[in-house]
Length: 383
Picture 1: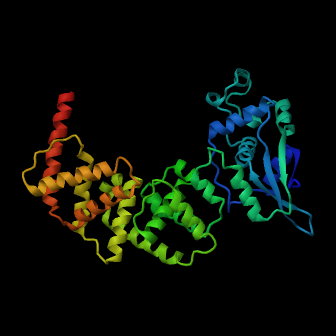
Picture 2: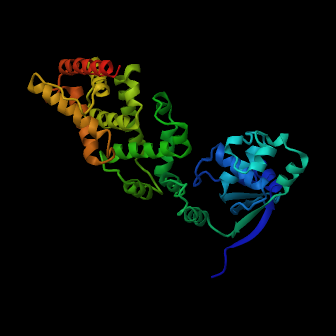
Picture 3: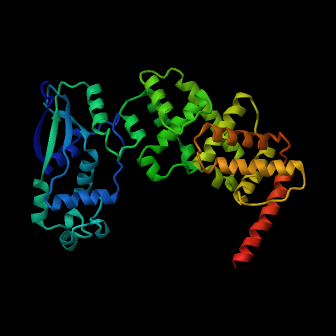
């Protein structure tokens, strides 16, 4: 079989200018986001300063303007390295000493920006030659996507969601749109690291899956993989699913307040709220002020409760309330994506809000007071 690629080298000056002029581009339809932090960037520059070899960059000539001859080349694999080089030369970061390894490099270049380097060092960086693998220009875009996926099959730095990105699924695109909504920022659900590694998109994919199919076991990512494939070409009911999510979001906004946000900004608990709100929305159950208070008191009890507590109950209802707290706490601390634990959290929270099965607000209030006393006694003992 004939090779469908060729090898050559390019100087950093060529790569930098190509990237700056947008002739070298990253195709975001299958590529992950920038994930390298300062340490990764700095150690790559250190490798270049040591004149050591860095891994190959894979490129593909995507299109050529017939009038100007300008060619747009895709960076298929290596965008993290190129971004690190481009941003250092552009003055975006300095070589922090704590991230450097080589002692000589530390002495010469620690805490220096590119513009602070001596001229000889700058020239050495500009003339550093990077190994390039050029994919055959006759490759189709699907073949290039597959190449990206194959290149990263054994790359442990790529997580499952970043690999799904390369499938260019319509379901994935809708998940990304959902992840960009202000709702998640308002509740501080995702950290910067989550967004960088696309864990926000994966979470939103799970919420869409919940809206479509109800509570599922997601201890593994198999069902997400399947739905990305099934709705890869077309996602005809995306508007309907997004509307379900938006309706649930509105109910969550009504039932939560500042005092409960510390609980609901945990991904597990927000997922449970979505489970209950999807159910309420489907059954046209409205959120009352009484429910807002019930949620607040439940969260207070949950926060105070410890599974090792031996709380003396004064009634069957109080004993049942304590058992529900134990079950919910345990289901929130281990195997959180198992269907059994998801169902426990859903059922308990729904019963709390609707006050079914003998779960009443005054019993939670009484239980909370008992736990506050127990916590105070522990603190006094520790003191």
